[in-house]
Image (cartoon, rainbow over all chains, first blue to last red):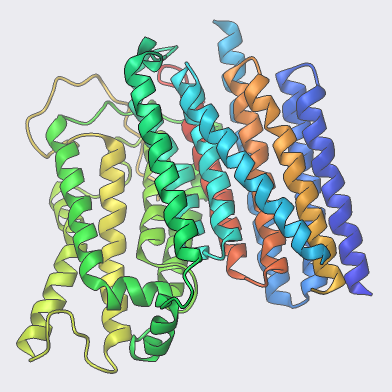
Length: 93
Length: 324
Length: 88
């Protein structure tokens, strides 16, 4: 049963990745693309990690997956911000 | 079977992506664009190693190929200015010759691979290693090979690294430091650097029984040094020159001291006595980690830091307060 | 292979296709920052791919690889966006 829920969560996470990719391709502006990118990072990876934690079972594994997600959250937020700032510097020149 | 087809599609996608990213990396006119594609290529390569059941290689590729190489290339582009591009040597007879040589090399490697896979009754190195692993002192076969069965190779690799960094140091004084980091980068550094150091320690310890080891741990520490340098530390968090010299040679020194001590005790060079292998391997790996980290960090700094030798007239650097 | 693993493998293929499509931005994207953000997508997607591989190939060490990849992607992003004259 937890397998099924886990799979459903993973699938849901993957749809966010798909949405993020499509957003990166189709949105008109760098800043809106960054927005789409971080949705994939946060929600997509989060749901994926939760799903995998449910499928695999085990507390240690779940903690590890949660930590990876937390790390990617913080890192991608900082990276997106820095990319946006650099773009604004280029626009100013 | 459904799974086989899915694996085949996965492998095909990975291969095509690798080719595409590699092509994009070498065919861009703008060098910064090439570096971006090169970093992407490194990320993909780490995934490919993982797919090929080589987690140790995946760790090393993720650390060195994706992160450190990209940072090194960017630091080399630092003096180029806004748009660094390649001139027309990219097209012409020399480029054509290089392309032909590359294709020839790729064809030769492909032939070797196909031939090797087709041998009827191969002698597999992995079987030999598996037979001897209980004698090696560790349970990770990669570490056993690197630090025990083929320890001479690792010793010489460390010597190669040292020679490379000596070459870099001989080039001249270090590049001027970056400006002090703004709040965003500073905030990133404050949690990223400790995490990198922690992960390095973890990989060093885990290398005995799980994927990891000295090279991966050293690369993580070097990444921490790169972050510090990007944040404005001129010395990338390294200690002063006397300690730097000690650290650069620590790996080779550990190997040499252990080897000589063993020879004095009646064994051959680097022939670990039974029961001591695990301890000696961990000792050598720790020293090697520090040496590799210092080597890569100094390679990133790109020249002699303050205190090594003749100073160049440097621009004013902004000094940060001591971070802890 | 169990059904769960097969389903995850199918998800992995979909994810790789998605990342490949997302990389089109790296080829097209007019500015350098567009290419950088496409590589960021590859980085996070790569973490996801590794986590899925860790389960499908029953190699828990790949979760460590995912961790290292996430850390180093942050370092790469910092190196790419660092500027000489201006602050980040």
